[in-house]
Length: 125
Image (cartoon, rainbow, N blue to C red):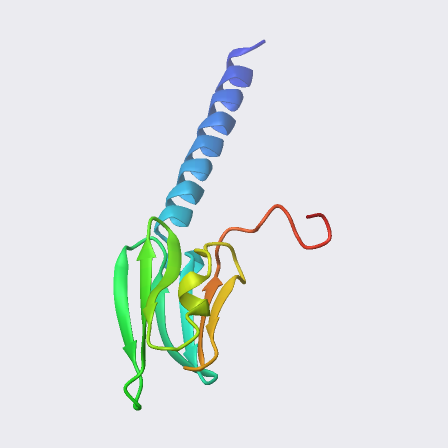
């Protein structure tokens, strides 16, 4: 092995490490690809809430009804609601892409967007 071969190997490795670090930082700080909860009411977008930030949002409707969306530890849930059946409150926490919690009496849908993909689907479960 000659001196120039060693220089070439070191240069290629250095470029690879710089590229890898750049991509890692880009993915970490790029908010466009981060998971969030999309809340729609009667098909109209109400708000977007990032899954990586713990928050509680009370969503109130014109008729006095309400839902409380709680995001904690990267999972979302409806912790409280004024609807009579409470199905949305008793629903499991969601964090995978395309999972949703629906409150039919209030017309609210909370859906995960850009979340991690589930390993098991309906056909393999």
